[in-house]
Length: 230
Image (tube, rainbow, N blue to C red; front, side, top):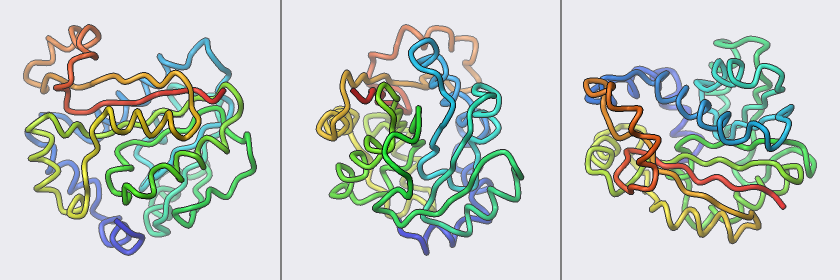
């Protein structure tokens, strides 16, 4: 998906997303928060998160959860869509820096961030560009900094159906978790770990404590790959 496509859906992004995930019984905010909570659990005690990058931040859905779980961190949100960034800045004034990038080169010096985060962004990007962008994220991370990339799981049939019926996923191409992990390693990161997430809908939420023991099972609706810069 290019800038024009993102701009086209910017104003109705949340309502489209909410309609698309209605079968889960959850809101877009639920999915946004669990991801940042996972990041916090992962990196706490391994590095001081003072500077965070939200790569492909869109309209800023993750911003309040960065504030909640990383209250001392300075957050920078980047996206190719000026319209999305303007909406995000209006929704959360003063909570983050919203900055456009050209889709190829992140406009920051080397070693700028402690965490680089991407939430279901890479399936919108031509897969031939993944390695170069992951190398860019590696470049702007400080030594010991964390990359955490969440994606939809193409092995989950409900996820595939949701993506196939979503207007803003029209040109998306889902990525197998092992493929993304291999690309993360090839871009220079070390110790890439893979975890599957979200197994139970809201109606079965009482079973969600079991999910902590199921992250190895490749049937979750989403997954993440996390790795550190050496």
